[in-house]
Amino acid sequence: MVKEQGRKLIAQNKKARHDYTIEDTYEAGMVLTGTEVKALRAGRASLVDGFAELRQGEAWLLNVHIPEYSQGTWTNHAPRRPRKLLLHKLEIDKLFGQTRDKGMTVVPLSLYFKDGRAKVELALARGKRDYDKRQALLEKQSKREADRAMSAARRRQRAAV
Image (tube, one colour):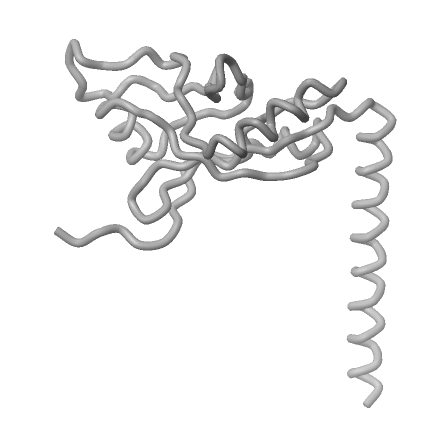
């Protein structure tokens, strides 16, 4: 059987980048059951309400919704069960130390297969306030307008030549 190569995206949490300022990112494996892997291979998952919690020296992924496998039997999994994350001890200690700071949390950014293994990209993040979100949207909009104006100027310059 041929091994999978590369990265196959399953789910992405776009709202996390809007609601949080991303300080640092980590890649973690997950402890999954067979039906969870099959449901992920079908490309079904939701990271919207997900977050990671650190307890007793272990990292856990909570509130991530992986729907039941449609062809599963009584061995099917619970869709929102806590899933253990596979991180190095030093990474867990670093995250634990930083999440004790006010406003810091660990949120999942994306869920993907990397060389056939399910991985989750975690972000150490600080919550944004409403005015921060508005400011980020204004910056994004002004950058888009500037890029549009630059490309229009380049087109006019090429047409003149």
